[in-house]
Length: 260
Image (cartoon, rainbow, N blue to C red; front, side):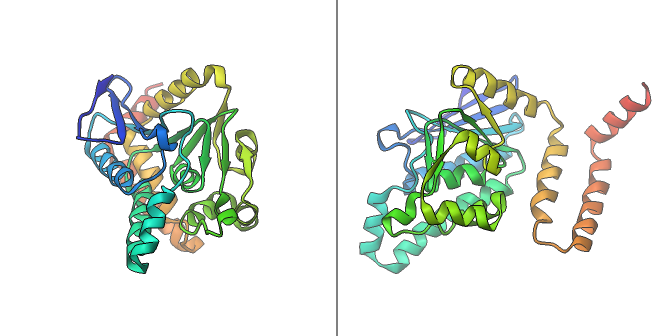
């Protein structure tokens, strides 16, 4: 495991060169890893660096301290309100860029959740490609209780759960357990608290052993076709299928299979 020094103040970043797993830890435990302007900017930089680093095959985002992420930094939100609508829009758009980047980076991004993932923190998890969580973790969008709206994260939530489940979480603002989130489709894997580190490491390593080109193309076709008609999605799939055939990994895999 090697540390990555990119001048980050609010992130801890490590790369396991053996497994190709890039661990990115939100490091504002005193504020429950609230998404400040600086933290969001650093996360975007870390994702860009990871995307360009050939050593990295999987990106895992987690949080230091007792919680994954409590959402937006409300002190900063309050300050932007006082600065006016344009300041609020700029702040919101910066967070939106982070959610978009999570889909654009070619490598799979996994949210590793313990404690609470609330509001924008829950949105951050749902914007990742995969979510693993401890049994004791909780998820929720409590913005409505403050008269606020989980507006950007709604795009992720709706795609994860569908309209009615998404609106129920947004409208009630209640937290749900990790097992309940898994039943809804918000979480992929729930691991026991006692073995969470080992189970998560095994999951990430298994993902990292998969073909990097196949994962990148799978991610591309999944997100590129979500709003296409059936015919357009099949056409896009055909293009990606042709690209996949030309990769070294696919050709090596087919040759290996044919030799059996």
